Length: 232
Ligand code: ATP
Image 1 (cartoon, rainbow, N blue to C red):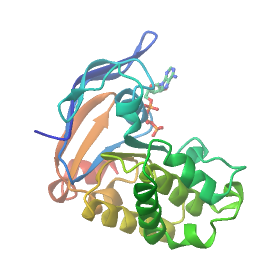
Image 2 (tube, rainbow, N blue to C red):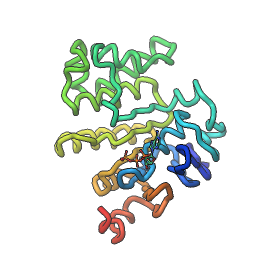
Image 3 (cartoon, rainbow, N blue to C red):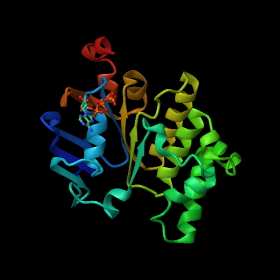
């Protein structure tokens, strides 16, 4: 059984059906890519999984149905929505942002463990811990957003276009860190437009087109698929 199981997921915005009954599985310990062009429904899918928009179908996290459930279950998924300014708290310091991500962590020992892990993954966040988050570069802000999500020690980390608006070298850096996060055992579901670069680090991929899954398979196969290469 997959850690995250999505079945027949549908989302309507008024008369428009943005997600048209999709199925996807994310196995524990894997990095899964959800690819597709602008407007394909990728962000809407993440929002539906985390309960930010009303959706139909079913979403299981382990044994638990989480669709329509707010609160603690979905809070244990590190949601990291990058397009909207990466949603960091610009007026707070780096350290305060990280602390905010750990709001559901009760034990001081676990908190310190999570903080050490994040600062090891992103040494720049340790160096800049007293700096106002709004003054960080775009890449550093993305690292902070991912780090903050990891502070909750999520069962699954959901990322919405972590590469958006970043320079190629910084993207490489962040993608390398995502591989490290996955090898430490954190499961990742990642939305990206940057298909080929993402498939190089992913285990499995899904391609969304107009609200439907048009292709899926092991990343190593998709990356060689002619239809995909042509489309991107
Ligand atoms: P992008 O990469 O451009 O963010 P996406 O694949 O994430 O694209 P979504 O943002 O999920 O796509 O959008 C899917 C469709 O739903 C689009 O046609 C979009 O215009 C529409 N849509 C998204 N949010 C809303 C909303 N709040 N109200 C109405 N329509 C919406």
